[in-house]
View 1 (cartoon, rainbow, N blue to C red):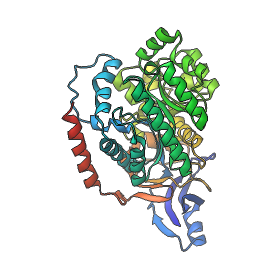
View 2 (cartoon, rainbow, N blue to C red):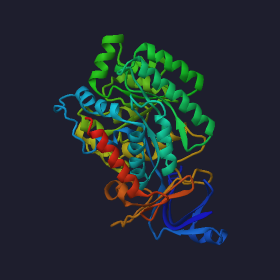
View 3 (cartoon, rainbow, N blue to C red):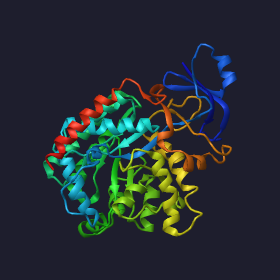
Length: 442
């Protein structure tokens, strides 16, 4: 057992308690008890004691939309003309890169951002992968990296018709194989979904095949929705309906699925999202970077849509996304009252609700019986911290790099700024080798 004590402990439970000189006892992969340091030390004198030294102790952060495969784009020259619209970003950058990934490239492009995430306090991540000329075994490679790093993961392969029917079918097969494998593990550390790229690259034929397999396996979908206006234009031209309407009518949207972005949507499409009980995930930094617009955060939340927050691999730091999620509603509406409720609700409440839909246990909260995903954050506050102002302290005073320790499923993975059982220099060197190989083919 591990007893973390002398903490300023934020539980994120229904009471959202902040316990001064708080403590949390970890027994195996579960949280056994929460209280004060003095009472738990007296009650469990033989537990291994980890001194938080007055630092913040929080539930681990959760990233509900990530793209590990994009890692090698960092610093890469795509040798494409400057993009002036979203479709050109896809063809000139991402669809060049993903075609060049090998299985070794898949592994190292995954393990590096996984390491970055645990160093920044992310304990759970939902990823969306693409490597059209290295499909078979790709999800298993990512799972291998996840096991090495120890990050809680939900993975999918990005099924798409953009590279032809054969590769689309390989994507379906890889998804089926991996989802069956993940189910056989019966482990909350690894789960799987079916992934779609976007409506504009999914034919009805491929959709029909995937819906049948998803129904057989009882799982949902992780799909980009109306990110760029091109997706909407394509859907209207081909199907005489908008993107959300197509997915809604075909049964893609449900409480088993994640609809990502949802930027270019109408009010009545928001009603469909609500009716389907699908989880929507916004990625504000990425949307701004791609100049596609922004998810109507305020409007979706007013309708009661479950809206979470991801990074879309634009960053590996959830606190960056948190800060931008607070600002962007203000900027769009020219209303400084917005964002204060929406941003923390997405990150600290809805992200855990989304992640907990896909596992049997409970994460994102420090309470008896929850899975032990816990971080220690070094933050010297210039003003008092209370349960009512903790979100503002995190917003204005903390980034992922304030994280000192990350515990996932009861195992210390990052201890006082040192990785546990990972030779970072070796992994980074091999990652750079793989990146150079890929860059040479661009």
